[in-house]
Length: 124
Image 1 (spheres, rainbow, N blue to C red):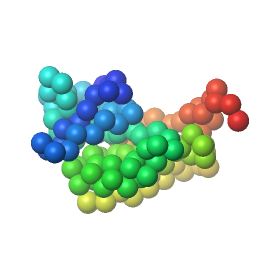
Image 2: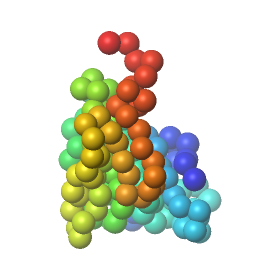
Image 3: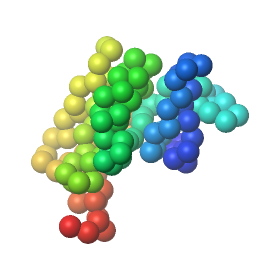
Image 4: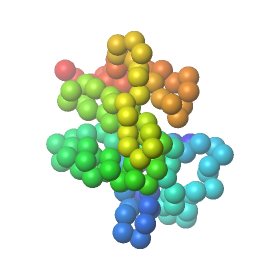
């Protein structure tokens, strides 16, 4: 299940993050609270912008890893890149997309996108 971009993830009383997209597997929907997600989702996506870039690449990445988000995808519209990171132990490692320009997910097996798919419609 994919959630609205204003859905927050409450990791602790002091840590509430609102990613650009969230995926939770069907068998884990019990982590949904009334207003927030109350446990680490399976996948989060952040779309970098000048105002959020540093926080998305450092603070949020560290918090997602610390609290056990299985996969973290970072979309950079300016560079036209997508970085998929899988949690290995307590840190993220890049997921091999295989062929150049392919994007694959460990959380969503069988999902294959190209960079062209992701950035279709964006003005150069």
